[in-house]
Structure formats: structure tokens, C-alpha cells
Length: 437
Image 1: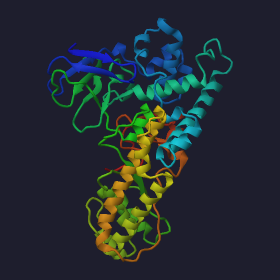
Image 2 (image 1 turned 180 degrees about the vertical axis):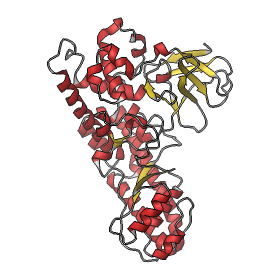
Image 3 (image 1 turned 90 degrees about the horizontal axis):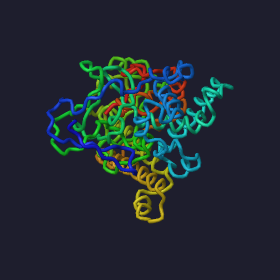
Image 4 (image 1 turned 90 degrees about the vertical axis):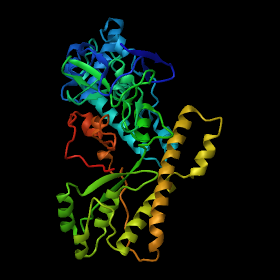
């Protein structure tokens, strides 16, 4: 098939190497549709009634539980053997005290807490549906622990197929290592010509190249999905929420300007270690305008200073936001560097430390960017104000969970709604908050 397959017991991924050269868009590997599991297989697995009305990923988790119960008699046993069941140390699986202690100050703590809470509620609903039918759903196989493990494994393995508009668990493809490098790696999609799935390179692939699935997620997602942190992740970022204040006397006029640009009253923007997004600065400038005459100068796509006072106020808000977030950790960046050099850290402690360190570097980098902008306009008076944190509403955290494999720039939010099956994946749903780069 033109590929060499290797794997290691310590990894949740499988390494595939090209045995020959491939041109861009050439199918590196074609997989039969009969080998691909989707939510439609739940009925055949005997969990169709439990899956009714639930989201695709939850349905796949129920399918996985049912097929595991069959053991070697399951036609899916070879595929299931490749999935990372019980090998992922996601914070979702940590005791709440570990999350509180190891992720203090990190947005990952609240996200992991919310996801764990949502899974608790989801399982309660499934358990009620099972009732006393223990002959079909024996407690040894259908219990909360098995359910959570199945969901974690499915979220880590499921690949979204844009052409088929569904999630799938796919031999080899589901366990490919991921890359966030722009333009690199391979894509996986439904192939109408074969009725199966094809893996294709975004660019030409040389013999001996390890295949990596294009999946540019920040470290927060890598940690929550796989329990991993990438030290040099080009897509790593933190999110800052910008919003309008309804009590603002210019609220209506500002809202109309935002609507004309397809923006809402609240937007999330990623902040990187080396740059502040233009759209975030533009939105904040608009939100802090006090003079109606300034509205004519509002530009939401370019880095245009409205006035020295407006700029000073926006930068002070960002400065306070970054400082507050750094303070919330209870330790400094230098403390994290020193801690990483300790030999007595457990694997979980080391991973959490690397995540905190990555976040602090982003915040410190953002502070440096703000200070450089602020230096020429020191001394200008400003009014009081504060930014709203991106995780202020627990009920909104995890919405769009099923969009993550294709839209990693989005923060997880609304997972409670998703987990109940109220929101099947709608890629590009305009109702969901935008995240701008």
C-alpha cells in the first residue's frame, strides 16, 4: 500500500511512513467504507434506542461500549484494538482536586471541570434510559467509568469527513499523529469515487516521510483531548473576549457597526505569544469610543488608532487583563521553569507544569506587546473598565465540541447542550461566536 506502519506502547498515535513519493492530492491510502465506523453503526450494535436524539460523538461512544462487550466476536475488534482506551490522561479524567491544584489559574481547569460535569449529566440520562434492562446492557460494560473512557477515546480518535458531513472512526487515520504546521500534513475525507475514505497530502510527500494529520489546535486542546502538551506549538494561544456594554450611550450605534461587519456583541479572539490580533484591537477601540464623531473612524479590519486617549484606555485594559491572569496562577513563569527541572515530578504534574508555562509565556509575550504600544502615549488619563474572561459562563463553555476537529481555533463552549444531543454538528453555524485570528 506504499506505507510502513509502526507504533509504540507509550504513544496514543500510530506512525505511518511513505514507502514511495506521492504528489500533492494523490491518495496516499484508500480505506474501504466497510471498515469505517460512523454513528449509523449504533443501530446494528444494539444501542440505537440509547443513542436516539444524542450527538454523533456520544453515539459513537455508545457504539464503542457495545462492540467492546462483544469482544473478539465483534467485526470491529481489530479497529477497537487501535483506539486509545485507558491510555489518555486527560484532565477530564483527573480527580477534581488534581485539576484544582495542578491547573490553578489555567483556563483548562474550568473547561475540564465543565466537560467532566457534562459527562456526569449525560451518563445520568443514559443510565435512566437503560433502567433495569441489565440483560442487554450489563453493568460491567455499561457503567459511568466505561462511558467516560469511551467518550474520551472517541473524541481523541474521531475524524470529521467534510464531504460526508459526519464523524468517523477510521483504521490508521484515527490514530495518525497531528501537526499544526500550516500547509503541511495530510487530510482525511470521504472519497465518492470509491465509497470509502482517502488520505491525501496537502503537498507532495517524499519517501520516508511520516504522515501527520493536519490539525492545528492550541495546547489547551491537546491537553484536554490527548493529555499532551507541545512545547513549540505554532498555534498555541489564549482567548480574550471583547464585548460591548449595554449601558453605553452609543451602544445602538456600535451594535449596528458590528452587525454590518458580521460581528456580535461578544467575540473571542486568540492572543499569541508574539502578536496581538488586529481584530481584537479594533473591536476594543470601538467598544471604548465615547465620542459619536469617532464612530466614523471605526475600522474593524485594520490596525488604525482612533485617538491617543482611546488607545491608552484599550491598552490599559489589556495590560490589566494579562496581569490579572498571571496573578491567578499563584506562581511566576520562573517558578515553572525551575519546577520543570525537578526530578520528582509525576507525569501528570510535569504535563500540567508545561501547560501552565506555555500559558504564562503567551501572557508575558502579550504584556510585552502592550507595553511597547503603550510607551509612546504614557500619561493620558483613562476611565475605569475591565475585560470579561472567556470562561465566565459555565453553561457556554463547550458549545461546538463537535466542531473542534475542523475548527480548532474555537474555544469549547456549550458542551452541556451538545452532550444532550440538542446540537448535532453544524459546521459553520453562524449562531456560534466567532474567533478571529
